[in-house]
Image 1 (cartoon, one colour):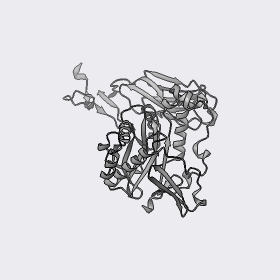
Image 2 (image 1 turned 120 degrees about the horizontal axis):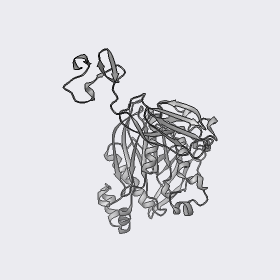
Image 3 (image 1 turned 90 degrees about the horizontal axis):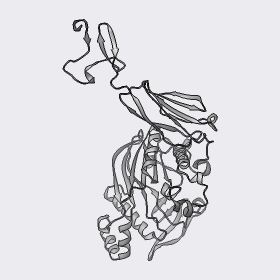
Image 4 (image 1 turned 90 degrees about the vertical axis):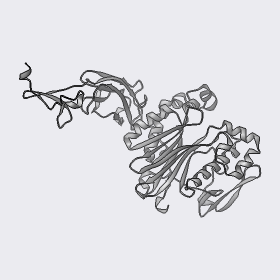
Length: 407
């Protein structure tokens, strides 16, 4: 009978779930007499389960992507990771890093609630850890050796799948000598993820990043404190550039995409340069087809209080396009100067530069090395001063670090 029911903690004027009483734990309830009956708004149902990569490796994190329909709380879903039937981890944690004892075993992840369950079984057994970049290039600055206030930066063209296993051109023309399983995106994604985590950069810029790969990378890297930004190239949704940065290290003050191709009159050349380019019709026409752009970020380093700009780009790719690339670098420097960062910005990316100086050992050579023609009538001097390599007026730094104390 109505007079026998005592409703506690209920706002009778409200018509939604917030009207019901709440326990300190956050669960909702309705009181009937001395009883406290829990309210289940919509019992959570697991509708799908996917993973960051379908190829498990020892030591490389995996992450489950679970879609749930209904109301979910911290303890209403369990995620269980197992190896050939043996439970390795059972909690609400969506990610799991395979261990050496998982090698050769079949990994399974299961997401379950009181009313539903979904599983994903990896079809390929867990593999041993592949060698990473830091093992291959021992001269690179290693994470454990850098000063806490230094800014650790990495840049990596990860090769879009449309230029690799995702097309016959990539498989048969560009990389016919690469084993199919190594060229496969599932394999490369895991190795790329390993390299990014091992480099432990404060900021890492990537090129040739597809939207799906970016989302999967961000899903894992966000668990390690990174945020990200992805920008496709001009006029195409196939691939582009991405930047990942440690949220605890930087405040993002501003970011924008800067076109490095299109109508010459709209790109921001200095007047004298623009006038010269407009007189050369082939260059004007080439720029109309260029899809390059730059990611421009203005960051505040919370450790040092310094404000600087960070750039990521992928310049024009044609081997004969030295003049186009030189003009794109001019656009970048002009843009930086207009923004007030002419002496406080870091440019990263795939610059598609010529290889005249790739075998130089700067500490063993001193003085002018020579002048190299960028285009007709335009030369750049390559020199070494006190062990530092300079290309024109651009200093080439070794390693991955910039000392923020000197900025």
